[in-house]
Every structure is written in structure tokens, then in C-alpha cells.
Image (tube, rainbow over all chains, first blue to last red; front, side, top):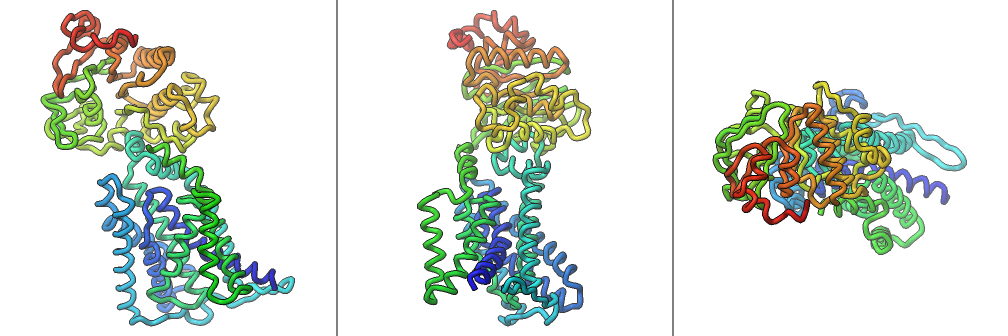
Length: 296
Length: 238
């Protein structure tokens, strides 16, 4: 029983981590808490849904959802953040303008879907269950866990082993110095926002499949969780987001299973509270703090 | 190699540079000196595309680069080592150097990692460390090495001696003189005017946004007006 609960916790933790990867990428590289990430995530789920309904195979639907969400995310950067970047302190202004962008996306989706909860047609993803050692897990759940691992690895490889990643980190550290070395900041913003959006898009489709529901507010619960994850993991830390996401999933599942109902959220925020008491900069936040100090 | 005509620029709304005309030929090492706030750094920032021009034009290798984006100017081989070094503290030493390679593009260059490491052996020793953990002098070497990785046709240096111990300043100036002897064109901005005039062949004196003197460095350093106005306050530093 406890093993099954732990497994369920890891799976829902992977779901959170999947959502949080793109969110933390932007907060780490551009110091923007992009609340429109939830809207992009939801849009990805809708694109995937309509592609499947129109008869496209699931893999193609996922690819199109990633491209669509990636472009949307870059579009949000252009309309909501680019103008603010000329100013020095953009954190707060960008937060507000990302709330605006999120509301616009939610309203459009609400109109288009007539406030309906849509579900993927039965059998879009083969419903296969595996049983071993008394636990039960679906193929889709396994795929989500595997996908988080793969995307995590790819994202770290991109950021730390490629020239593109070096340019991204250079712009994150000191945009002016980066330009003097021949880095084009526009291309960096395009890459990070596109990747963040594409990650949100694939998360949207898979989470829509997992819970068999696609609706205009589906991003909102993840936004709040995403906040907790990004702060607990350390602002902008990719490993931090994955670890904090898994931790959150496990805690939440255990709390739901063994504590009186209604205490789940209290557990989650206590976790955040205690975590920040012990490590004010988050689990993996040391480096991010050093970066901020170096900038001053 | 570099020709600036009737350049003017504003910084924070105040006209910081007016009627700037000068040119630098290939292989020269030229100093730009002047008191604090004269506009020396602003002028370098104009050349590298960080500060927009209000009037005038800049030609680099007979191409008009006025108004070009900073990254594209760097990729043409006009590389700027900014004031305060501006190394990327959260990247490793080697990553800083590799990043510098970006500006080179398809141009040929005699500077690779090996050449930089043999010029500044301490960087090789520290290559895996975060650049933020280097001392000021090492950071200056890294900043210069990083610009060299970009295969520069011309190097702009802003106050390379700032905040460094005299012994380290010697090392940095030795490296610059050697680079110039090997044919690299250099424009050097310095507070430390004695030092700058010793190292260069020609110099411009900038005051309140205008070029007020120009000539051979040797002549300037013996010109009584220049000594009185611009060199008087700092003989103790050299």
C-alpha cells in the first residue's frame, strides 16, 4: 500500500516537474516569474486535443502542440516583456503583465470551448497497465516519468554543454558583456521562450491525457504548485525544480492518503515554510544567489 | 582601419560627446586619455554599439558600422574589453573563453585556447573554476583573453589597469605591447595617463566630450600643458 502511494506520489511529482521545467527556465535566465506559463500550458493541451480530434496521430499532435506553444510563448515575450526590458527593474512589471497575458489566454480558451471540459477520445493513448510486486502503473504514467527524465537531461545538456547554452547563461549573467562578445540577445530570448513554451505544450497534452480533461482553467492549480516548486527548488535551478516537484508530489499523495482531508494544502505550504527556514535560497539555490551577488 | 567623423552622443539625456573626429590605422596602438567623466568610456561604448550615436558616423575596415547592433560589431572583429572587466562570474574560466570564440565566426585567427593559455598560464591552471572566484588581475587577463578568442582585428580596452596591483599592471601592459608588436590594432583608454603614453605611439586627449589635444605620445608626455592638466595629479601611481 505505501509502495503504491509512493509510486503515485512520484508520478504526480513528475507531472509537477514537467510543468515546472519551463517555468523555472525563464525565472532562472531572465528573472521573470512568467505566470502566463499556465496559459501556454493550457493552450498546448488544446492544440493537442484539436489535432487528435481532427484525426492526427498523437505523436504529431504533441509535436504541433510543442511548436504552437513555443511560438505563443515567444509572442508573449514580444508583447508582454520586451518593452519592459528597457527599464532596469522589470521583475514586478513583468509579473503583472504576465498575469494579463494569462487572463487573455484563459478568456480566449473559455470562449472557444464554451466553458466545456473536453476529454481526449478513448484510446488516444493505449490504456495498458503493468502490475509488479503488488503495484499498478499505467503505460502513460511510465511515459510521463521517463519523459521528465529525458527532458531534464536534454535541458541540462543544452544549458551546460552547448554554445547556445553558454550564450543563454551569458545573457542571464550580464547581457551587455554578452553582446560585446557577439551574443545576439534576441536569439537567446527566442530560444529560451520557445523552449519554455514547448515544454509547457508537451506537459499540457500529457497532463490532459493523464486526467482525461482539457479545459480553460487547467493551468491554474499547476501555477500555484509551480510557484512552490520553483521557490523550494531554488529560483531558476533546473535540478531544484525536478527534486522539489517530486518531493511535492510525494508529500501531497501521502498527505491525501493518510491525513484528514483538507490538510493537503496545509502540508504543502508547511513544506515550503520549513524548507525556506532551513535553506532560504531553496534546495539548489546557492548558485543563483551567487549569480545575483556577482551582478551587484 | 577605424574612422570616426563628427560623432556626437548623449548619455542619460546629457550630450556626452561632441564633434569627435579621429582615425586609427592598422597596426597602431593609440591611447585615449583625459580626466574622469570626459566621455572616454562613452566613446568606446559608441564604437562597440552599446550607446547609440546622435550624429556622425563610424567606419571600421571601410564598412559603415554606425547604428549596427553591438553583437554584429563584435562579430566583425571590433572587440571591446569593457571597464570593470565584466567577466561572466557564474561561468567557468574556460566557458568564458569559449564564449569569446563566438565573435570569430568564420574569420581566421591566430588565437585559440592554447595561445591564450600560453599567454596567461594562470588561466589554464584555473580553467575549471568559476570566473567569479578569480582575483582582479586574473579577471582582467580573462577579459582580454576572451576578447582575443573572438579573433579581433582591433581591440578596444577600457581601463585595463583599474584596481590592479602595479606588478599585475606591468604584466597586462606587457601583454598588450606584445599583441600590438604582432600586428594587432589597439585603442587604449586609461586614467593612468603616464602608463598609457609610455605604451602607445599616438594619443588623443578627451575633455568634456571633445578631443582637445592629439599627437605623438612622446610629445604629449613632454608637453607642459598636458602635464599640467592631465598628468599632474597622478605621477605617484606609476
